[in-house]
Figure (cartoon, rainbow, N blue to C red):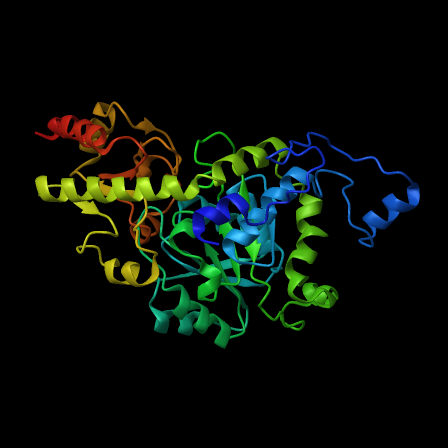
Length: 410
């Protein structure tokens, strides 16, 4: 199936009892069974079925199945938020003394999460993305995973997924990729060699800022060395499902990071229009970035679709015809950034991306507030930086609004 057809039909179970065109919202905390023996088999993983929504739910499972098909993996697990999905992705395989090797260009919340891991004896080493010599030199006998974002937020740098996956696999390490900013519309990391893909589905997958959620997808291809990952050894019998079998029967189940059925339903509604929205948003972002770049030489524009981007050539090679829906601009000072943001009438001023509506934020004072000066520099966060998540409005209206806001810089 082509992309938009797959969004509507791939992974969809059309055998719903009453013929509903959408999986119903199973708003139930627990599920009744005909006998004690039947329920016992479900708890012992000897029969398929649902017992408790913290462990599994039909609506959530339907969402997971569609994401699995979309990303090209073997299984997905949906969580309460993108941060919960990241936490589950790592703590499923890590223990005290282990290290993560990560790109230094990260969303501020991910950096905060890795800092919290330190209390459990798990440390993170940061390296420059795509500096493969530096990455290789940073690998040691405690390294257990390599992590990067497909497109850094808000630096908008691009990870060479294929090259990084090859490097990781040479050292027997899994590559975990956060694909939130790109989505499967722009690139499917598993096809390029990634082992685990994480999406904050609160963003583009949902599309309307009405549900918090996250989802991780396992490629099923990584061979988990029982000596390096002893906690996965008992699950080796599940073959390509070893990683997700352990996660669903362990950390995910026991920490209660489950997705609510209502939010899974809202995500499935949003998922069906992902391709249409992303195409429009990417086209709008390209038009806005080009207009600012051509008409305001004093404003520094960062967008992957512009030849001036240091990552433009890699983006052309790796992404599928479009360059994403986010751009950043630098306007000279924090005060100027605040003035521009406050003068804008159409965009919402909030800490999200991927909405149908255009969104703006000043990262240095919000999503990256707790980062150190070194972390801010590595992540491409500056005091005069504005991040713009472009929506599906008519581009003429977006441009006119920014034209009026830029008058505050004169």
